[in-house]
Image 1 (cartoon, rainbow, N blue to C red):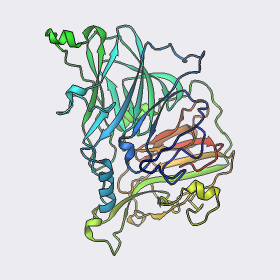
Image 2 (image 1 turned 60 degrees about the vertical axis):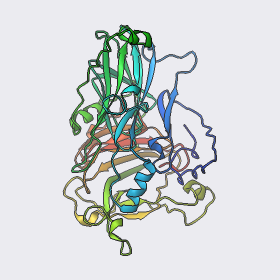
Image 3 (image 1 turned 120 degrees about the horizontal axis):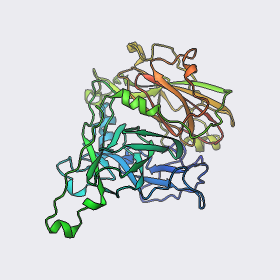
Image 4 (image 1 turned 90 degrees about the vertical axis):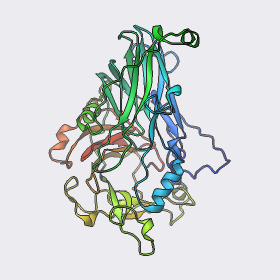
Length: 447
């Protein structure tokens, strides 16, 4: 979706829509087919304001696989027993980690494993012998999620609105923002089977929502309509899938490494910009004028996060793109570092002197048409963690991913320059790295 003005967080590409106001998005879909999604991009409004955006083949074109008998879109979400804006405001005010969610949802419903929601569980119909398309979207605010369907295999055919080389799996792992299209065949005894999602959580010694959300895959012959239920027809209890353990990084990694483009693609082989970005949490020292209740992070600190030791600060009265176009100074600077200011053992025992980042509204300028490679390196500052990284305004090729510190002398041998997957969000492995490439051909501010 190629517009630089309407794809990004508030005050980056555009100012937020004011309460009571409206904004009409106009964009051109170019070279994409499959499943995307839209969401609010101000504070934590994305926790509840989101939906699916489906791009079907052009009229007269067909899918690169047998046309499914029917389709279902499954939006995985997070739910708080409270206003999500209050949750993030409290975290910002106290410097502590935000409260974890109270439930996960599928199409807004937690499913019948929670005590309050059995009447609203989502039903996904299927008939024996038919093959259907499930469009799975992780719209959760913070949490990577495992997804599985009891007793059924899933054939992955697309991700992030790009087709993939088909592969079969029992479990999906989607980072926040990622989408995956799968085919499912009604080849099991007619019954009811749970579709279930639960957390993939790789951080250490941290709280998380360890619950499971469900929907029900229901075969037509066992469907209980209002009339048959009143006549006393027994409702079959659904079969539950075996989901991975919450910290099963091997399963998560095996899944993400299975993606390939359907055919040979044109990956930039010569690089104009070779960037290296570290990703991590951090702890800011408590400012002298703050009371202790505002510094409730570990040992009286305040949680933060950074890339290349810079914690980003949003402007508050003008977007960065507007300031750039109108040449207005003082809104941002163009000195974001292309490499970590200081090299260190990124996934080892990091010195506490590196735990407090600098802060600023910094960008990095790219020339139009430049061929860009970005190494995304997780760090063990505070705790290592699987990090979803999304690039607004672009799709990119994921050349490789691995664990430990990226080594340009040896890890480049792992690069897939033939058929790497085309994505818009990459899940950088916990205590590991991922390498992406793209051509900077979409002008604007892309965060």
